[in-house]
Length: 109
Length: 113
Image (cartoon, rainbow over all chains, first blue to last red; front, side, top):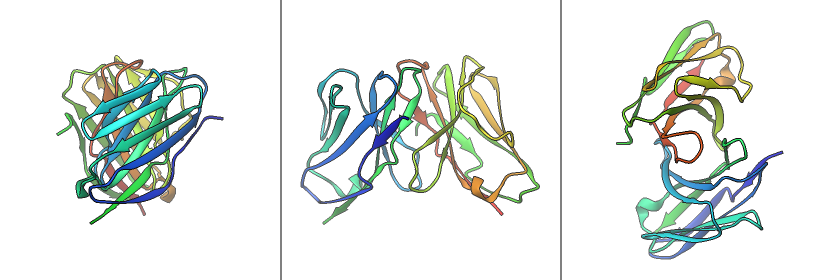
């Protein structure tokens, strides 16, 4: 079966750095996505990785290792507004998105 | 503002009712999706349309019926739902099926009583 694993919840301090991990087992791979979802709102696109390595976009970076079936989302200089759920999704060989259950990130002052 | 709108935002319906959810995208995308989001569970893909044609993929109970009259609009018709169908229903669109990221609407919070 297809499976995406990510921690259920994480806590971090304002101004710090946090890394949210995602491991996957899917039938084929055509890219990995990270989305942010604030409570009661729609998911919004953060990043896309299809090749191994690090993609940096401002305070957020996303890393992919296809051989390990592993990705992480790195958030720097955390702000209170970063409190949200972070969803990992993999596009499989049929170009369907397989989603993780999301990681709820709690930022404390 | 994501360019994808959904109505209504909240819906309470009885198990014998018939209702419809509406989604509209203003992004000129070719693909549209319906997802179900339940608490602490992964997003479940329900239906996919590409260029107004339904892409057969997931088994969804027949009490959910999609309709895509044109590339900008997507409906989800609901009838004789069960309490376990209570969830957030999200619509999304993307430029195409194969490469592009998906843009989500705000969702409809459905409660079946």
